[in-house]
Image 1 (cartoon, rainbow, N blue to C red):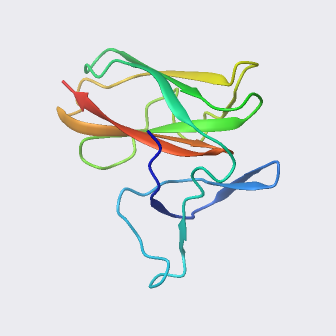
Image 2 (cartoon, rainbow, N blue to C red):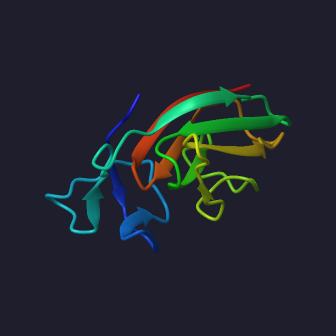
Length: 138
């Protein structure tokens, strides 16, 4: 499931000449109206998929595995049901991993007990594209 969407560039990260957004915003933006908005380059360089997703229970660990080409830099962002980015350790733009020889990278973090239940989402940003999926927090 590859989803194309728009993102606002904040501080950017560069890997192998590819611009990765430092923060992905939940609200859509229109590049025709807003010059700070750029369309995601999802799928331009390859495919990114969620290979495995476990968790969603407050106070417990969540695990996400992304698969793309080997040797690709990626990071994931967990978006709280409120729409705000999570600050949990183990995910976010500071947790950049490079995929292994099979193209896999795995992140783990704990969803805090104060997190309110509801529909959250996880966004994976890689040099090869971007993908997101919903996650029900209980």
